[in-house]
Image (cartoon, rainbow, N blue to C red; front, top):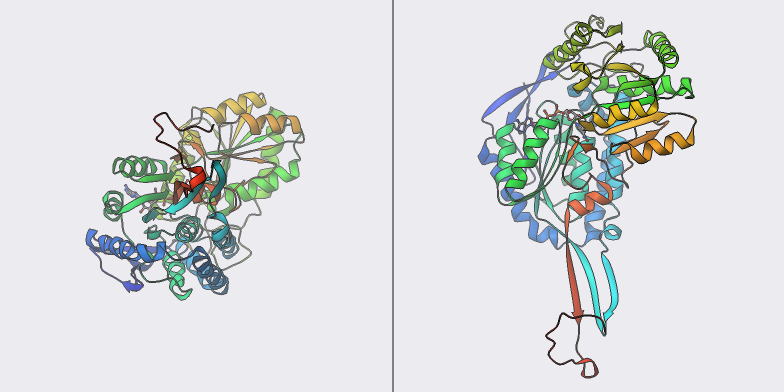
Length: 498
Ligand code: NAD
């Protein structure tokens, strides 16, 4: 059985306190084992990053950017292998893996602009003969802790930008599908990154806790579930670190009576069931305004769902694959059963759907649940499976209140032809990312990604301009070179511009 190890100081390393099975979710079989790093191995990775920092910090941004240009080319050249690894351990279909990788590469492209994005701010003549400027300097060693659902894209949200800003990095990927993350991380060496600047340790809570408490780590980026995000944020900040911790989600789509129904149905099918609903931006609740529109929506979705194709990653014709583990499959089934027991209507039931030849896979069929209410446990929870719930509301304001009252505020969207309604929604909804007739409003790499409420802990969003601010700290320098005609006497009052 092959072992997925670590990448420390430019070398592979399989040190472990134990080995943990990695599954192929389509077959239900163990495919590899991941080395769970003991504390000392994580400390070795931090030491490597700490030692590499002084020289990397002083490397000109253009040189750092050139490594990212080569890195982008390598990611594109090796895309098939990367997507295969994603498919084998995550289960998503090859076209979806390619989409994930492309969105990740776009973050590398943004990082290629390092000399431009690190230019800083300059003001001449803030006083007689005085100039002032702000530098954006790196923090030192920063850590990233990432979830299973985007083993390439979410790590790529973090380290390309952190590295071009002059930091060194230790990444702790998800232990459930670490192979693609390790593979793309190692390509940085081939792109010319000096050893020690980027390191990967595989592990569990012990590895994470070491990153959260070691004094040499200056900042932590986390993406994962909300309870863990809360823990990461509280522990990292209590240990004096800068932290951004992105958490879970429950994303609602409001379907207004004037919406383009064909667009709504197409959008909802892809955004609810794509990637088996295992996306933090998945649309998992449709709020239909009025019973007529709700009946129409449910009827059209039901018809279209009968032709969805669930299966294995290698077949491009499949729409989505299995969920990540047997436990998660059972958890999703539990949410469907709970909705049923609490009075909702199961319109399409994915609990018994199987894929021929893959009966032991962790599959959950696409499920549609109508007549859901906000009191139901399945509404309150993030299901993270191919389950779409329909709620019937009387007005847009009732739907907006519902969204605002939910603990999560990651993404949302509205389907309408009414520009005034859409603008009101975008202005006032208490959610960080908003779509207007767009189902998955994931910001492009030159904007920033983040939710509100319990979907994000910290002040800055991920990647893009907020990412640059997160991975740098401002230093403002005020300078004068005194000359005879500018020399002033001693001043005892607060200096002001006279
Ligand atoms: P998770 O919280 O279980 O794990 C995320 C990371 O935290 C992993 O690396 C894991 O090893 C580590 N971890 C888990 N438990 C820990 C603990 N007790 N102490 C310290 N570290 C721990 O999340 P997941 O199941 O891998 O990913 C799915 C979740 O991530 C969903 O809730 C999804 O919404 C969320 N997510 C959010 C975003 C976003 O941008 N907001 C993006 C992707 C995924």
